[in-house]
Image 1 (spheres, rainbow, N blue to C red):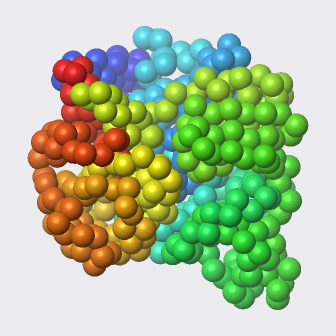
Image 2 (spheres, rainbow, N blue to C red):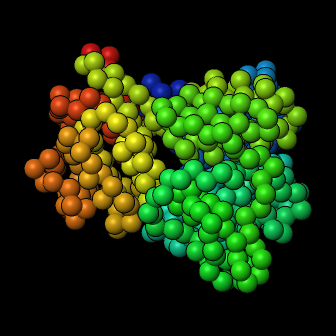
Amino acid sequence: MRKILAVWATKLAILGSKLLGKNGSSMPGSLALKICPDILTRLSGDIKKDIIAVWGTNGKTTTNNMISTVLEEQGYKVVCNKVGSNMLPGVVTAFISFSSLTGKVKADYACLEMDEAYARIILQYLTPTKIVITNLFRDQMDRYGEIDTTISYIQMALDKAKDAVLILNGDDPLTASLGLKHKNTRYYGITENLGLNLNETREGRYCRVCGNELKYDFYQYGQLGKYHCSKCGFSRPMPQYDGKNITADDYVSFDVCDTHVDLPCKGIYNIYNALAAFSFCDTCGIEKQDIAKGLQKYKGQVGRMEEFTIKGKLVVFNLAKNPASFNQSIGNIINEKRTKDVIIGINDNDPDGNDVSWLWDVDFEKLNNDTITSYTTSGIRSKDMAVRFKYAGIDTDKMTVGGDMRQDILNAVNGSGERVYMVVNYTLLFSTKKILSELEAES
């Protein structure tokens, strides 16, 4: 009875949240856990095939949803927390959203993005059969601490799923090291040097095995690249899923396992996300050509290089929440040859992290670019962002300290650039998406 009561109450809470214009992805799950604390164990037991956990600092929402898209294109029924609510309540909400009123989950797969620090807690209630880890970067220092703390959380979770198949980004030494002691590990990566030559803050400079400084033949971005330890021999593993013949002019494409993949996405980082999804789906026995077709039908979630047309001008909207993801967004902006107006929105609410000192680890200096006609800072910490711009050497005559996001967007759209690029952190994501959608409808 507690299970059914929890399902009914949660479904009503989800409906109420939607009627109020909210996502309804976390609070309903919290309600269910109060009524029936072991509800996730009960619901997850109905999954027929695999429970997939997707972890990592950046790209886990996109990877998770790419996997779900491919599986759904094959006719499978999939439980998935698609909007990225990745702590225990959000996972519970995803299951109850899919369940019947009697609490039955008729699904083949559960595809679940999980917060790295929270995975060890979620795994007290379910055990994934496959785990995908995208990458590991410093993120929200006041919440996660240093990267070693994040890795320790992940290792605790892995200790609860020793029989799971691990699918790891071999180009990231921090992620790759997690597979050394795991009995069933597969790697994906990009062996060819993409020649990005990004001067970024690097994580994981030291070998996770012996502590010696790693040597690199080249970097792709961040600490991702071809590396080895001259002391103990730890090195980049040869990937079973190796991205080749990569193009990234507007949208990106690549070959893997003699299969060509076209993605309806921008950004080199999305090749890594797609390689992770391809790797997983191949382990499920899906035909490689069918995986490629499924990936081609993927539609990005909120703030993943979303495009809006407002007053005839294209606005590109992206989420970034740490130095690594911001540097990738900056790369997308400066690689755009057209002129553009740029908006950077920064909040410091709890989900964002209250400490914004990480802004000084982002390569905003690269935004000193003749194709950028104006710079607007927005959000709660708009003034902090303006100070960071000033010290990055950006022309203050081109800079506006905003704060009213709707007006900031309209000012940029009315600017002289051919396009507008917007980058915001987490708690600005959904409110800004709502404004963009309204302005597009009004146009």
